[in-house]
Amino acid sequence: MYIEDPLVHDRVSARLGFSIFKNMEEAYKKADRIKVPILILVGSEDVITPPKGAKRFYEKLKVEDKELVEFPGAYHEIFDDPEWGEKFERTTIEWLIEHGEQRGNSNAD
Image 1: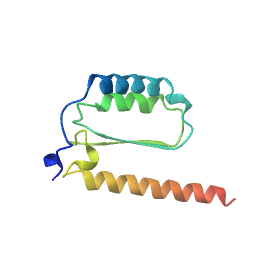
Image 2: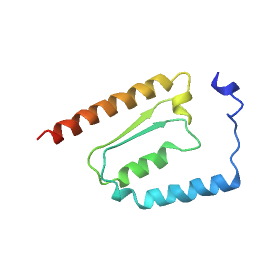
Image 3: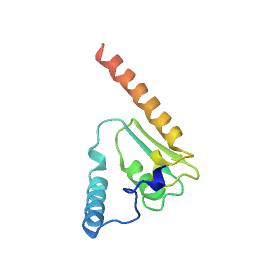
Image 4: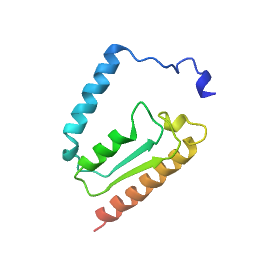
């Protein structure tokens, strides 16, 4: 089971934490440069990456083909969540298939 995995823990080193926050800030500053379709999945109960931050990032994106999906009751580790993991995977796969088909059709012209 996921939670029993010895590599799963609740600690983050200061170095990793600093790097994450620095890069999140940089990503936010450059969000308007993104030109490719983007899918953002977030759990409504995520306290590590709160939905509010994901929504701010989403709103800053200038690309037209963007989608933000919030799952009520889901937490941070979305793909490992026993209740939500399968739904996240399905949503991601469907989005990738849809966008792969769109890209394939646009190249056929």
